[in-house]
Length: 488
Ligand SMILES: [Ca+2]
Ligand SMILES: [Ca+2]
Image (cartoon, rainbow, N blue to C red; front, side, top):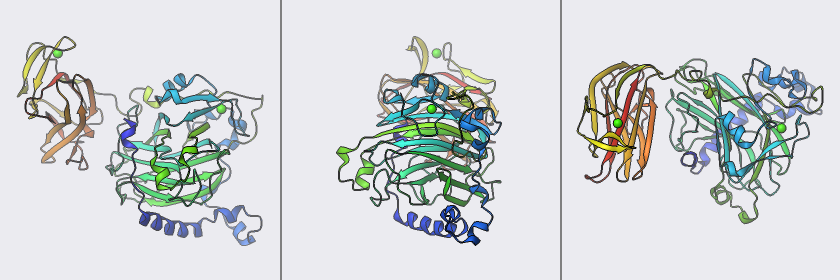
């Protein structure tokens, strides 16, 4: 599933230009290098530091990061000292391409532990924290000495309806009440820098002007392959739906490299920053875009360590643990605590298992022994539907759940829910389903939205009292539906 969402189109040069201009303006306000340069004029040094450039972070309170996981401002800690990749994946919530993930004794100079995690080619860990309005993420990272250019990298995500797996969305502008995200990524900037390039932000939100996300360039300092770095990213939501006071910033080895302001990231404060994607995604595309003359010599490997996620600035590790090497108590995904990130599904409002009848449903027929021996409801591409068998005001907890089995290959499966309030259908796209495959579908009613592209208003606040399922296939194609449930 993660493959689909990460294909990326070309980065429009006009955006790069605009952002460069914005950055130049910002640089005047935040003289990052001058403040660190002992030869800079005294006047520059005497100026008060911008709030985000404070050199002291949470890490300065916990030498060697010892006990940092117990700070109430800290949301998640992972030092890769505990457990196998499988166990690490289980506590994060999801690991992909586990066969490409190993623990390594390659550690950075300030490491308070023994091990880092190593990815080869393609892999990810994906996790969730409690939802917050401002998130800081710190990680240590090293690229292989022979690294090539990288397609996609580490992301911070605000997701209204979080799932254990990262969702799609490449090339799609997310609705302002559903999602925004930013990636802290190396980019070659069309071959201007050797691999892996320089750090930038690659960002998706509802007001982005381009199809493929927006790029925000910071200080153009080429990343040295084979060297460990401390990289930090901050994402701050706008304080009210109508205010454009959101921000994002990133630091390298404690130095502010880029700060960008004036974002209206979200249209509701119900949308919180809550997901972290330790992603390493490679294709042959960036080698082409950057005109890499020797892509065949590249070794796509990366190391990560000492991840801390918090609501305040963290900073690089300072000092050493009191008693030599240490292990953190590793965190667990907030999604593993039901009801913490999103209201748990409500009470059952309606269910139909099709064992005795199809009461409420129309335009299909009962079929015995259809899905794992259970009787189900069979219907064609024009769809089946149910009207007025339940009436549920749509809240975050309102959930729709059912089982599908395709008797032929079908495409473009989607749910239509008519909304009187919207005077339109709200849609939820399921996608294709291969012949013989059974799928458990579960989604929140607030995920259904007006419009073919699901970009319009959602079903939030409407009354849920109908459901229709349609798909694309020849007229004689058939699909089976079973165990349909509506939860309040
Ligand atoms: Ca470690
Ligand atoms: Ca059944």
